View 1: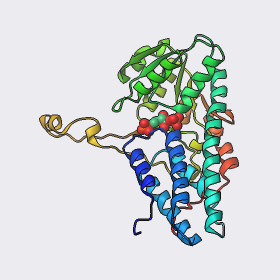
View 2: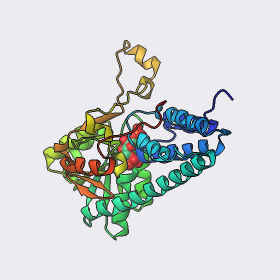
View 3: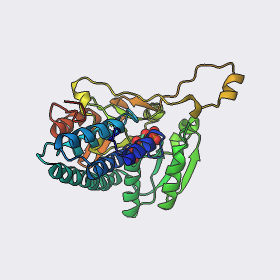
View 4: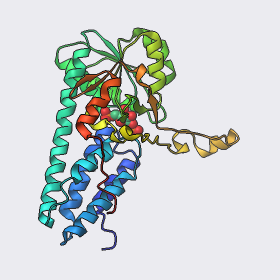
Length: 317
Ligand code: RUB
């Protein structure tokens, strides 16, 4: 076998790349499951070969989308058991770590949902951007607490992830008003909380999330509307503690405009960044499964969870 990366891993990587699988938590869950498949299905009989297979699978997954730090964080978690002496030992460790990782992810989301729900009052109106399962967990918990919540949902161009949010909120029984992105400021006066998720949180408390989040946050601050970021600790970016920056994904022009229309316009340059950075001064609280944090203090939690150093277990030794 020349290509030792399992076809199922390649399929999952492809689905992440094409955004069939999307959203930071969901990507992390899929990546952990992919490594589990690689460990179980690999025909390696030598532990070093299995380790190399797992590293190659991890790199394949890592090459898909660069911004959501939940992806490398998931790979790091699952690959920590690969120094066992036998093929069976590595397999068992990776399988157990992947299963534990996915269970922790679900638990973390439920726990942060409770924290976020405590910030919401009965009768509150929230405004959302994109589709975040962490953010929705807060609303779901608030509804379960018996609170009446209403939502103004930004459609979130170019891929309209707001539609997914609208559907999910509707299924929770939350009345939804859908608006175009540029109407956000117009409706902020009617909103008690802006509630968004995160793809990564940097050591200085900056929040990296779907393009448009930072503009929304600046407008919300101007209107005096609190901005809550729901981000389980999986979204904390350990590399930013040592000066690394978060890579912002640039996506295809075709997501915004087709070639024919582009030609009619005289072929202007098109830019399609998928994410932006919201500075900490525009964020009121980052809600995690470990409680809520002012963005400036998130680095304390990062140090506790990751220490000072991060490893890259997918790198060739
Ligand atoms: C998704 C996005 C979400 C975060 C958090 O972007 O920006 O707000 O990933 O999501 P894309 P979750 O659609 O480009 O992946 O809370 O589900 O992890």
